[in-house]
Amino acid sequence: MTGRRSPSKQRMYLNIITAALTLFFLPGCLDSDKVESDDQGQIVIRVDHHVLTLEEFNHDFEPLKMNYPDADPAGLRDARIRYLLQRLEEILILRRAEELDIHVPTAELDAAVDDVKKDYPENGFQEMLMTQAVSLKAWEQRLERQLLVQKVIRRELEEKVAVSPEEISQFYDEHRDEWRRVDQVRARQVLLPSEEQAVAVRNQIKDGQDFA
Image (cartoon, rainbow, N blue to C red):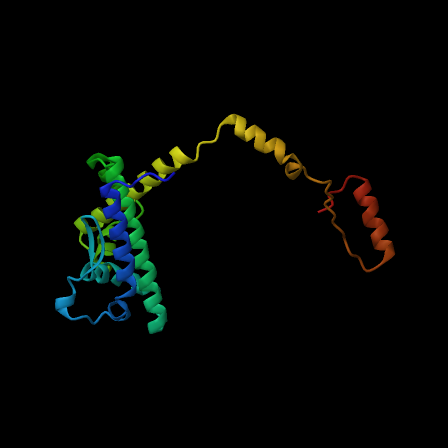
């Protein structure tokens, strides 16, 4: 028997449905970057207090457009929709992080920032920020979201994907034939223009010469 959902979960499911409907009722917004300024504050995703506006979406997608230099309008629109669905998935996971009380400590975030900077040459990190037209604060917020998503996924997998030694042994016994390898032979040959040369080479191999 299915239990009754709590009011908070009901609101979240309603917001998810609202967000999904918004995806399909804003085709004009996704087709073009030329949107009236009054529409830039329009909300395209809302899950509880997590909100993504059209302006934020366009700003975040702008650097990604470089990955589609030859895309036609239809292809670019598909790319925008895929990115919007990614953002929706991210927001849902961040909402789950709140439920699980998962956070990214400042020290952990600082360490992650330093780790990323190591991959860039001198001044390369700042040049990357300038190329993407993003501030350091906004980039760090994006990194923090990524770390939170990773933590939630690890937490959920640890709880739901726990395999005991007994289960491993049982799986091996049930699939034992799949682990067996049939006899295999590695064959190599040397092609020569005459039987006389072939016999000479064979004798050399018999005498211990390296086949290669």
